Length: 443
Image 1 (cartoon, helix red, strand yellow):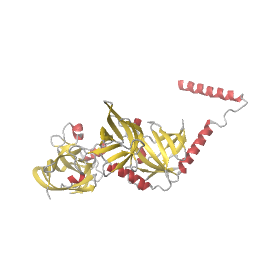
Image 2: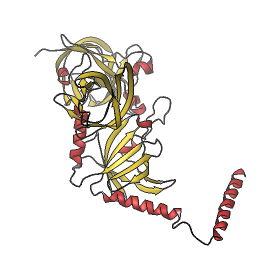
Image 3: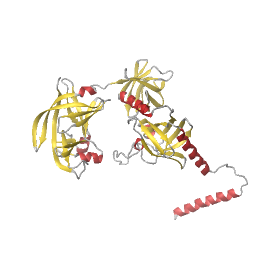
Image 4: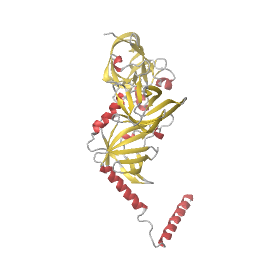
């Protein structure tokens, strides 16, 4: 009833307004708001389509730009948008629907799923909130627009998103690959901040932001600034003041492993990549090893010595470890110089589809299918000794956080079908390896 009364009041106000207008002799508005909205939708739609080679979107993620920015390339044809994204292969595109609509304001909305943009809004299940996501928008209020530049604001999280028309001769694949190359080569987590060659502070990369700390008149200043990678370096979202110098644009020099500012009056500012203490380069892990371990097979636990090979999978990103019951993939964190293992599907071996995960000998394990159901991958990190070169595997903290104890074995569990589901899980394990010590064999 209360709702109806409110509706009636609103209708009365509308009627009163209409009645008042009937007695006016002049129309002070040359167009209705509805017509103006329709005209804006048409105007912006045509503008999006007018860029024959598409637009470059500087897409910032996270409330208040907390995760920084990435580059998306977008081409609009009136119904569908074709996108390419930094972080993917340059020739990989995804097409989906979009609309320009008028609600409280005129908006560009990507209204069917496109992984390149909707992934940042997709629930990630973080912490106690199953709906937590990376706080990326896919609906944008258009603030201003021209044939060269469109300025928008994310509807939900409010970040300013800018699109620039691409030159007709720009090659999408080459552009995305150039951005990816800079990100891949500028892999450092920490950088020295140098002015005229003098150390004035430190920066640490977190996602696509830099946490910057420097001395300002005896006071340590620390701030976090979002950035995005470009085809030859990176650019802060806004100019940043560092020790009295304002900077924004940097180019990357792979030979000296540093960024140099290109802004007028600030070319003496550089960011030099630094390696963490004990850093292990990708190639250092490659080679043949002898693995001493305890092996569980057919209900028996025995001491074993096995020949193992670690081979290149994807350079500077991953390895293949060969010599266990099945080959497994190891990841390489180039920024930290760390090799690691995560729960994974191995394939069809010895009559079963095998998974590989971590195991605590004192309490048991969570089968591989649980990791894939929950999106929670258990793992090990390599703990390296330098001379002679070798490593052991240690719990990466995930199993300990969930199970209350550290994992100390690697287990290959079994499935009757390639879906790796609870229904296809076969009780027990096919093989386990524990107390693993890998020692490199000198060639």
